[in-house]
Image (cartoon, rainbow, N blue to C red; front, side, top):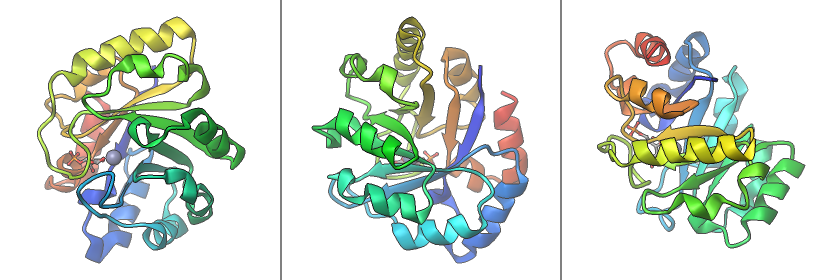
Length: 216
Ligand code: DX5
Ligand code: ZN
């Protein structure tokens, strides 16, 4: 099974963002996770197109863009133009989710759906075959550095069964409070992609932490 690491640049040093992207280019990271927050869907604002465009000019790995925004469909074209390779929207923000997934695909990007901690898996039943990625939030979205919600592990195991039963190719990504202590249990539960912000950029040796996460 695929085991990928997607460091989140929300925890990078924005004064030296280029240096941190170069570090990720050289590291064992597979994707670069990019958290976009609008201050409405989540109680925080992060960054948008200008930063993504700048990152794209030097990034050698796919940009995994996680949209924590209302009405994300208004901006799909702009995120494509900025350089997103994978675009993930929140189930809770999309009344016309199937259409949104189609639009993301038509623009030539991989499409993901994120679920907040309280959102049950059964809402995915009809859409699992159509997506490339399901992102399980293991903290409430909005901030880096929060504690991992333990119930996410059983949610991931159940999602793994659901995906395998339908024969869907969707990858499972987990986001929030991921570190060297819980990476192995998450991979064992069926995760394909670990997102890690603080545990990577807050460590003394981010390159080594990425390698160690991958080997968990
Ligand atoms: C939280 C974001 C996460 C965040 C993870 O809303 O979606 O991607 O950057 O940060 P850590 O790994 O510090 O929990
Ligand atoms: Zn994220």
